[in-house]
Image (cartoon, rainbow, N blue to C red; front, side, top):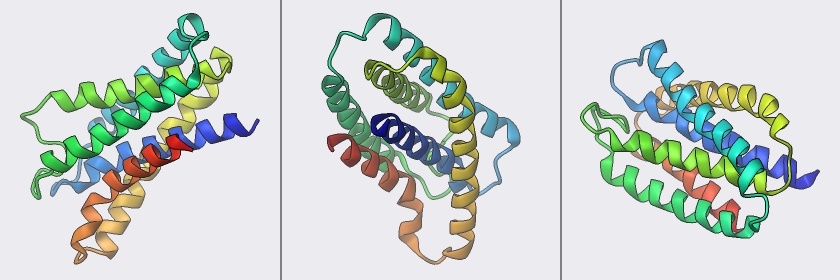
Length: 170
């Protein structure tokens, strides 16, 4: 039971980090962009849980923990390099970031399934992940408004991904 709650906590943190990324744009993002970010979190996670429960249940979850750790560290380095003060983490001219984020959530779904949880938990994970993306956006907009003169607040999503990477080592 503790592993289930721990994995849900990791998924919630990663979804909140994903939801806080579009909050850094100078213009307020449209609701369609939030729907797109929710789909980036939900679809690969769902496919990863189903595929992981079907094909990768025999592989040790420790291997996937290492992969998630390395992938989260890659995300931190990639988005740190890509951050722009006007465009935030989501510039229009680059498309590779969507595949990287989708791959991370796909790997999280496979790792969730290797613990032996049923694929039926998808019905619990989907609304939880969607709500976490929205909450991450709301919290980040509030934090940017309250701490607008603090320059380091813009790197909070990367700090969450770094925290997820460290939690995967535990």
